Length: 173
Picture 1 (cartoon, helix red, strand yellow):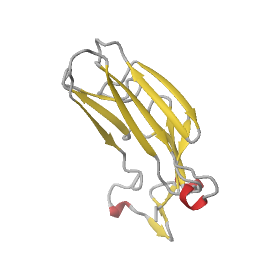
Picture 2 (cartoon, helix red, strand yellow):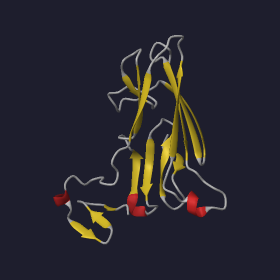
Picture 3 (tube, one colour):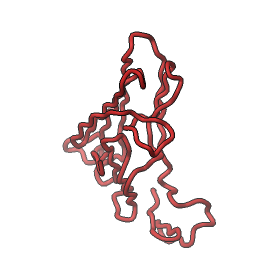
Picture 4 (spheres, helix red, strand yellow):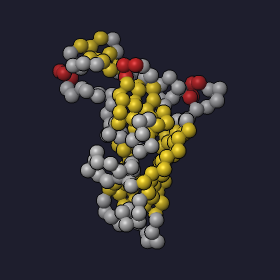
C-alpha cells in the first residue's frame, strides 16, 4: 500500500501507518519542506520468542530486511485509528500479533488534539498449547538529522532551515 492512516496532532505533521506495518509519507511540522515520501525502514516493532529463539519484524514479510516478517496481515484503518493483525502458520511462528495505533483527538479541544503524538499498543497471542516467553522491541529511525552525517557537511544554515547538498529540511523546534 502506498499510504495508510495518518497519525499525529492537528497542524503538527504526521506519518502514515501503512497496511504492511511500516511508517510511510512522513511530514514534520506540517510544512512542505519536511516531507519524506516512501518507507521509513528504520521504524519497526520486533518480536522475539523463546520457542524459535529468533526475532522477527511485526510487519508483513518482504525482501527488504534480513529479519523475517509475517506472511499474512489484516489491516483496518479509519482516521484517527488503525489496526494491523499479523499471522502465519504455526510452523513459522507460534505467536500472532496485532498493533493498534491512534492519535488522540478530543472534540472541541484543539490544544490537546494538536499534540505531536501517536500511540501504539501491541497484543501478542500464543497460538500453541505450550508456554512461550516473548518480548517486543520498538525502533524509530532518526528523521531529525536525515541526510546530515557530520556537522561539517552543512553548506548553509539560515533561520531554521538546513541545506545539505540539495533539498532543504526544516528543523524541529
